[in-house]
Image (cartoon, rainbow, N blue to C red; front, side, top):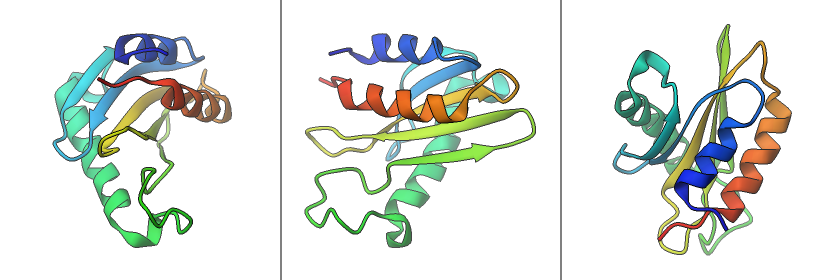
Length: 130
């Protein structure tokens, strides 16, 4: 089972990957980063992505209705697209509070969004946080 560094390096092997991070959406802190960052600053990018993740996670309209005990993150993933890239935020279930997500920045020209979504989900399931 991979840790943070191994998981982020695996994410960077996806076609079109420009950068990846593991972010705590309650604090906005990057727990690990690799590659480029949107806007060239990993910490700012993590804080901005955390705001978006927090909005989705804390609003009931987006939460899964089939997890009344709250054992899984309330949202599976978010996809934001612009003219030249995709941002995929994949929430990670953890044994404690599930307040982290993987953020993959993917070049639109070279990336495969469907493949990235599937693989990021697999990575999130195997990620070990201690």
